[in-house]
Image 1 (cartoon, rainbow, N blue to C red):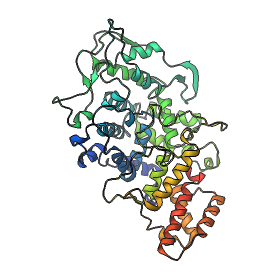
Image 2 (image 1 turned 180 degrees about the vertical axis):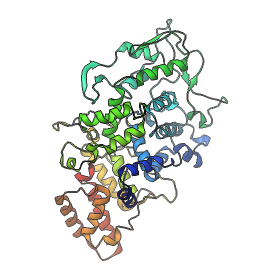
Image 3 (image 1 turned 90 degrees about the vertical axis):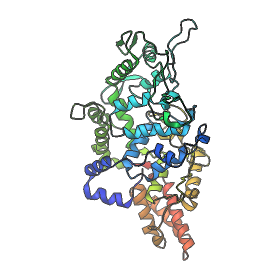
Image 4 (image 1 turned 120 degrees about the horizontal axis):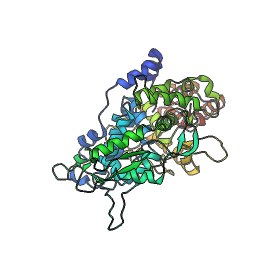
Length: 483
């Protein structure tokens, strides 16, 4: 998410494990939902638009003190994917806020609980089209919508192929079309909880879906080797279905590997995946799916912490555009005096970041976890959204954000301006805070020479030196590839 000097000092003082414990113990900051409410976005004029949601998402990412919780929430949003572009009903801003708040509430909770709450959220029900899903109709030949049944298996829990405990794949498929059809029968009858009978306030977006009418399929449901008997009520059937999926041996390595990819490295060694998956399977107290234990296992693992990996071309990950932006924003304490946080949708690749929170173009995320760029021979998911247009768009966007801000969203360079006449000190400070001191000697030399060639002697000239140094560091390969 981005480091500050204060966080670095604290980490050095207490060590990795204690710092993680402190982060996990921090109270959650104001929810996205409550931020929207406090700003008055629940006014009836906003019923049929998305007003406020981008600001609510950005203010969390850029300012919440519980950095680790926000980082894990973002990671989960790229595994259990929903997107604003797929919310078609009313109060779309609140639909998005409610969904991200669910992910945040469970970031250090249990993955089984997360699956339950996601499944019953109107956000996911709308996004994957099973809200109001009806049982089969023999007269018309219609069948239950299978969208969520397919994606909860393929993308959220077990994947397409059976896995070994270390995440390596076998050639055996995990499920069949018959499994999807049987599971889809579970996801029938669930719809909005319009308690009070009105949709003129967004409150229903926060409530779990409920069974309404007679759309639920009461008959037998068979999937993944399990049969739910005819006559079992909808809530019991749903719990049984999620328990069955969660018990699958693929869940631990499938989810663990993706979390490692999101947080540490795109190409984790099988042994690394196996160690984390073992913690996912059993946190030491007989509990499966404890995300707090899993996140600690990921970040404290020898592969994540070993300095020897810094020289490996296959270790690390491309820092996705949103995280490049948050790194700068958090390091230099961006503020919005109006508290509007009008950064907006940054998805446009030619002139903005080419990525924006909760705006994945599909349920497959911005990039696939197994994406291999041509001729590279290693997995690099984030490269899927890198091209000539996005590279230039990102650089131009950051140059403007750094020097002028985005509206009234501006950074504070009070710690950098006094260093502007001492170019080596200026570049070294930015290198440490943004790139963990990992810029190569050649890159440092190039940046120092470029900045030193600029005029100095006035406050405006010193500011320009700071802007240039920041822009060049943020365009460097060593910053963009996080290790």
